[in-house]
Length: 366
Image (cartoon, rainbow, N blue to C red; front, top):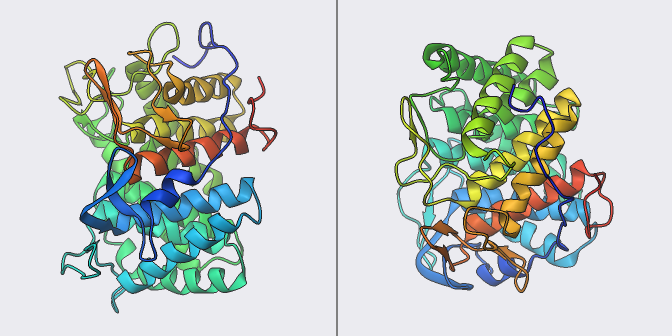
């Protein structure tokens, strides 16, 4: 398999000091603005619940690395308040809030719902205090009403992350484990319906945030011990490794200008931070689930994409803000630092630090 040998010529990956500066700059008393103009919030499109859900994960992961950080605690409270206002009586969520504080009637898409459930599950298990855990738990349980109806692979994967994290703090709701298994079975059926020969994937096109899918199956394996999930997780992650890494071990994520269709080639541009971060997270989970050091090597190489070990040799991470630029376009970097990019970078950064034993952030160990 592609990960069976150590990635070539990998150097130790420096991990910058984590910072919430960019997330704080994009946030106000309501939530986190979706878009940015440079490093400043672009308030035109307001807030999106899926960004707030992921931002909640990011700041609480930061809080585990830097316990007691007042900025992290304040932001986590703001984001949970937003989700509380967004949730409807039937457990669903309103998706958009304008900069003027007006809700649209648009309900969360399946992907957006899954990302919010991910945030609530994480907040239930890793809150800043008991009251936050209780609030997140109440919202999480109400949201489970919709979780069983999810149909799309990424929405299932996001929800599985939330279910996994909630189950890390026993006793979890009995239906949470049932939903985790049911969702894993749905993903497995998608894989079995589409995989053939060299195409080991869940769909006929590999698009965005791909590595979340094998990550979710690794988590299902850890909870159940079901080897079917492990086998599918490893095969699909190896498929992504072949598609996303060059021969010398450099990450080049599938671009959104063409994606990667069955029978075609992976698009080189535009490369998005969400995809690099997802590779870091999935490889970290693969390493936890299997103990294979080659996965840890790939994890460090994936994170190095943010630091300039990419197809353009340009940094995506901004040391001045602690955030992430919005992607690699053909011949240049997108200089905006929107919510998704900076959130995903912080999650990847915290994932790498946790996988490295939460030691000094100056450098992850070999």
